[in-house]
Image 1 (cartoon, rainbow, N blue to C red):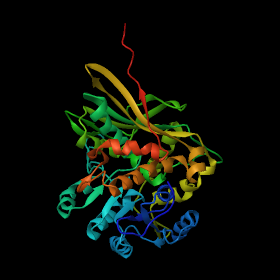
Image 2: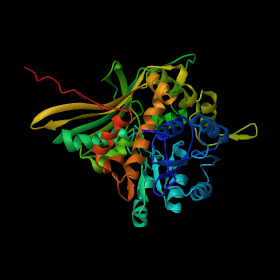
Image 3: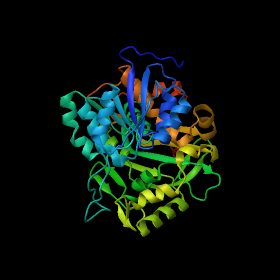
Image 4: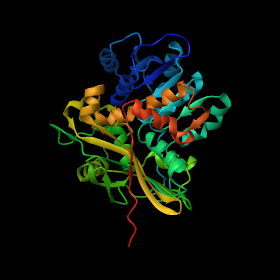
Length: 418
């Protein structure tokens, strides 16, 4: 696809809130799409937005703007200034509420890759959910419907692509589903750092230290202890067997709303070292996102941790290996047991060569741009607050190869016992 674009009416204009690793990857992937008229690169760190603008090489098509994502009126003002069609939320989910509300107020479409944050149950956090991921957004669904506006929540890779796979499995691969389990693992290493997360540490702390949510047909949503239900999962394309554990994640809150399954889980391959670091941060109170007084300055301990670690957006040259995101499904087809894993593997070397972005952020960004594509060309339509499962999965999956982002399906049905 060539890089030509048009200013004619009907071509998509996007306010991209957050130009970190994933935001940069979104802009780099979208740059080649002729129907993307303009992407406003908006970030609290204006120099970062200008750095990405220089890489993209077209300041008219990619204007850089300062934004404070906690200020709803500032987001609305930029959306109106550039007459955007869609606000794309690519910042840490602590800012979801003002960005989501700004899109509603400005009367434009909204998309994010992670939903509004949860709050653990005040007295029984490891059995009962308190405020769940996305509760705020789904409570506003009727308002969005009445206004005729569309908000797609959780459209990254996980959540996002993984949810599309769940809907595809229901519609095309199974008659009855026993369990849908999102399984994420990688064999990525990073040079020169003893500890360097390849994704936002702020978000990683949030999802890994909160009580994981599980959904079961007869119980609904319930919680468990962090890092529970350890299992070993065999990932494809040379990644191999990795230990995975329960982690709080949006798919468990999204999939049961549109896909019929008896159980839904999310498990992530964190590794013993990573789990140990996260437990230490919790023990010391360094996971706290509320500001404390430090010698007269008000700072959030979690922000300090994030500032002490390397920026994932700048780790690509030091990263090696592959990352795999996917959806494991177990159930029945034509009266016989069936088990499959639908997945996407991103190779860091290929992502760096093709997009100039490391694999983990590139993999997250692809789904968002494919979502824009489907909206722009009328293949995904709707109003209200919808997850990826609410739409036909075929157009999305058909576009994956187009975007050099192919999926695979691994048959995992056990051999019948003789």
